[in-house]
Length: 131
Image (cartoon, rainbow, N blue to C red; front, side, top):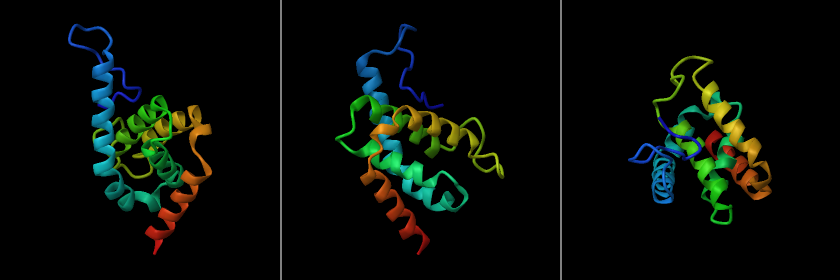
């Protein structure tokens, strides 16, 4: 399961060190880059939070976004992308509620970092998918 805040356990059972946290953030970024667009294309029409999700994606990959914000957003997005989560996405009406809750919490914490450019890019991406 994805550790949304990037705080895994180290080998000695304590908190993960900076290198472990950075490795987790890189794995989350790789997961998001590989799986985000295929999944969003499959499910966007069913997601009332699709625009926020895509804006969060653009914010997370924006190198101008502070590192701690990128790490948190990438963790939430990786949770969305990965098929194994608290509520399987295949469950009608309920499958994305956990994804929405995780994303809503992280976006609420870092709302100020979702720029008008991220939101415009998200709307454009949704418009392109609708064609």
